Image (tube, rainbow, N blue to C red; front, side):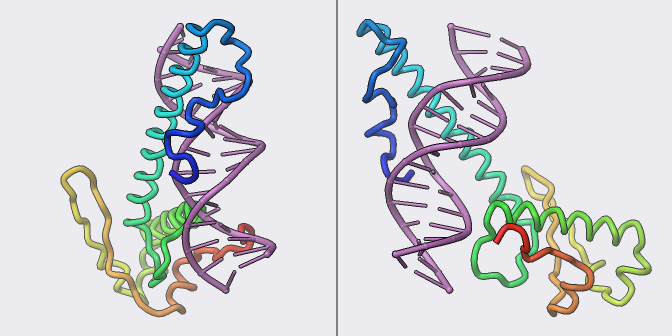
Length: 138
DNA sequence: TAGGCCATCTGGTCCT
DNA sequence: AGGACCAGATGGCCTA
């Protein structure tokens, strides 16, 4: 919702529309386009909702700023890999940092959310949890 | 002010 | 035919 919310160019037919020779066709095509735009908006909103839910379960390590979508995906990937390492080799990865095993499973009404007690300290973050703070993207 | 991030529109493609 | 998904284009907002 930035420049032209749903109004100024929502139909997208200010200029010539090849398949709308008659006013009736023009109207049909315009209506279809507007419906498609609305569907697309809704679809993207669903996608953003999913990103928000993902942000909530992914560590942010005290970042005051919201993770971008790209960062959220990268963090989720690292998080999954880290948890996987813990599960597959708990002695090696979890022994020095028992906090990692203090994972709490917080079952929400509509979903199963994994919350955790974030182990503090950047050195731990670096060792157990290698989120690449982002050589490629930025 | 430039660059990053984002929302929205749009046309194309694929699927039902 | 119509809906879902996708990627490119565009323009606004925010921050360093």
